[in-house]
Length: 358
Image (cartoon, rainbow, N blue to C red; front, side, top):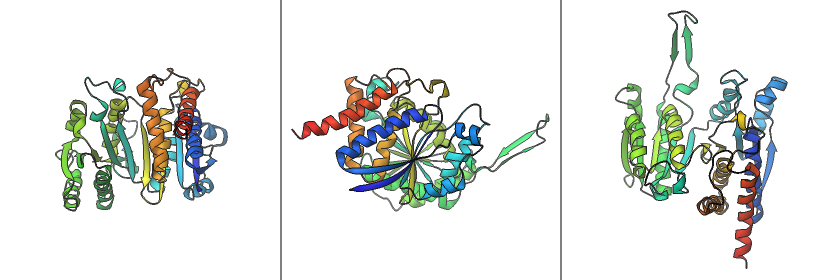
């Protein structure tokens, strides 16, 4: 039996609630498909910081490095200094584990969830590759004349040829494996931000190695427009860290909202972290009203990464069936108890296999 060690950081707000349902579904999948996940829970987050002053101690971080993968619930609390916990946990893992690919599937499971008129599930099935370790997020910033009328704030955008190329190459390889439209779209702003010429040139050079993949390009403002007007044009898109951060929230709305959208932070072949893209939503914490669908889909992505593809596909298919049948009414907070959704998905996974055996 395949066995994997998984670090689990439920985090803040609704994080512990949705993570519990994610693990419930993963346990059902493990039972049905014959593998074992050993969870290693870690307490880190805002509450832990308030109680202990710790954010992510190095001893624990070293232990995480030895895990097969990481599950994260949500991080953030308005009582904490802005960015302190986020940079101390999620950014620490992204940068120090070199999780250079942020993988965001944007897939419409049920057309009633889409705010766009006339768009069906087959029209919205794209994946965004967001470069995850460079750009304005490297922390190169500063202030001059702080708190004075002539204050100046600066933030440096950092791109390296190696960082850009590995993200672009991953996008081309993914387009091959998806075997959909076989198209990669580069999204940048090279006409106004001349540093993005590095992206343009690298995309063209790497693209010569992938004659079977159609290459497309859009400036970020146009890409926002086309995602709304013609989402069916997109297959795989690759973009900068900052633009990816913004565009993928737009994409999440197309598929039904933050309550359904999941992501992976990956260093291919080494390690990966999986999370729902919604925040900690502290106003809903402890109410058992948050939708765990995004966390459950993050669990499906985890299984895909661990090469447990049949189980991963079964979780996605179960969620799709429950949405399309109306048993899951939607993914907004309050439509179901959080535990109810986890029970439904786990129960359907088990009953589908039981039914197939008879």
